[in-house]
Amino acid sequence: MAESAFPQPDVAPAARRNGRLSWLVLFLLATAAISLVAVHLPPRVKMLGLFAIGHGLLAGWAAARLAAVFDLTAAKGVWSAIVFVVILGGQIGMAVESNRLDRVAEERAMAANPKRAAFWRMLESGKFPDDPKSKQIADDARRTIGARGTSFADYLQFRVSALGIKSRPLAAAIWILEIGLGSLAGMWIFGRLTSRRMPTAERTYATEIPSSLRLEAGSPPAKLEE
Image (cartoon, rainbow, N blue to C red; front, top):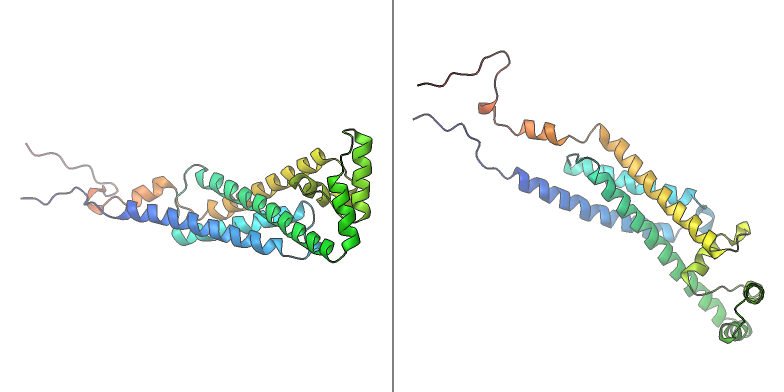
């Protein structure tokens, strides 16, 4: 009896699934580590716009290196979309952690200056009229003692205060643009680095077909016996 020509089941699909999961886990850890280190860099290197793009490029490069290690197959932009979302999450987490560290440093500065802390508590407990002029007076008083509000919007406005921007909505829009550009930069470098190296699904499938089922070049298919 002739041997069966049908391929035997193998563990390749399971190995590919494990490789994808390992890539995702390590990419998440790498992005978190990059974001945490970036938060603690000196303020002079945290340039608006450029810092977010640099963060995205580094995280995208790490994703591409891991993709080469685990030999991921292309899936019509799925991996690029995952890279974009993960880097975006890293950028958001970086801003949240930076806000927390700034608040801790400000609280320590307040504790070291009782008069400044008392004036700050008076500002925070005061009920100012809900009009632009009163808000401006309160903001000017906070800047006079070197303090700012406690909300995330206050932090975003504080980031761009050196540019003379006092509008919180404008500061939030600038930050959203920054993290969007940073995530796009990471997705772009990932696509560039993996476009020539990452095998397509069609090529991977072709290499998995057993040689017993492939037709030799130039040889006609065998006729079925009656």
